[in-house]
Image: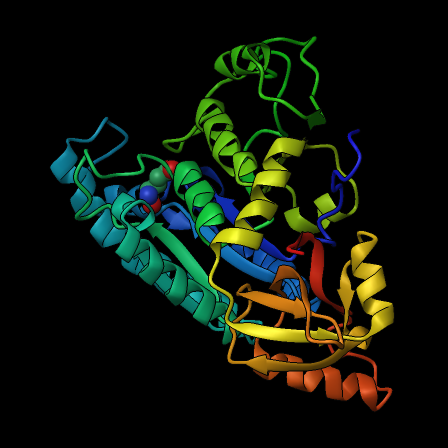
Length: 373
Ligand code: GLU
C-alpha cells in the first residue's frame, strides 16, 4: 500500500455512487427493485448523517422503458432506445423521490449530456448546480439525458458519466456498484481459479486484459467500461471502488470491509489534484486559522473545526477557500467540507462545547489541501 492511500469509505468527503440497471431494475418485469433501492437509500442517509456529500448516478431508464413499450430484450434501434429512456426515466425519478423522501432526504434529478462535462461554460453551470444542491443537502440523482443525446455527444454508459461527474465536482471517491464483486484475474463466472484483486495502484495493460475477460452485466457498461471510468477518476485524484451491489446495504458492506476492488490515485495524480486546488480553482472564501492549526496543517493534517479563528466569504460545499494564518499570510488553499452558512453553525457548536451534529470535525480534508506559500 502506498503512503497516503485511503482505504475507508468513512473518511471520504464527497462520494459518487453509481448503480447499474441490473441492480436497480428487475429484468423480467421491467420494474424498479424497490426493496433494494430502499436499502441503498438507507445507506446513503447514513453517509449524509456522517456529513458526507453523496451523488447518485442511477441507470435503468431504458430497462424500464423497453418493457413498458413492449420492446422485449432485443438490441434496440437508437430511436427506440431514446423513446424507452424517456418513458423509463419518469418512473425512475418518481421511485427515487419517494424512496429518498421516506428517509427524509430530498432527491434532485439532473440529466446530463457529455457536453455538460466537456464544454467550459456548460461545465461551470453543471458544477454550480450540483454543488448548490449538495449545499442544500439534497441528493442529486443523475442519469444521461438519453432521450435527446446524440451518439457523437453521449457518454455511452453511466460508468463514464459517473467518473466525469466525479472529476467535475472534485469528488474524492467513486463507488461503482455492479453485479460482480470487483475486478478478478479472470472471468469469475467461467473460471473457478479467478481471484479478486483488492488493490490497484496502476492500471497496467495486464489489468486491462483481466477486465476484458470478464462478463458484461446487463447494463451498457461491463468491466471494461468500469475500468475506463476508474482511469478517468483516479487521474483526477479520486479513489474508485468496484463493489458487489447485490449485497443488502452495499455501502455498509464496503464500510465493514467486504472484499471489493479499490483503485488508488497515483502520487502524480494526487500532486496534480493539489496543484489544481492551489493554482487553478477560484477561491470563494478565506479561513483564518490559529497557530496550532496552522502547524497541524503544515505537517500534513486536516484542518479541524477547533482551529478556525474566523472566516469570510459566501462559499458552497466543495468550493476552494484560501487559508491564512493569524498574521494574514496565505499559506494554503483547500476544498471546504462545509458551506459558509454551515461553518457558522459548526464553529458555534464547537465553541459552545456541543458535539458537532454530524460528528464530522474536519473543515478541509488533508487530501484537499495544497500549500501556496
Ligand atoms: N442511461 C442508461 C439508462 O438509464 C443506462 C446506461 C448504462 O447502463 O450505463 O438506462
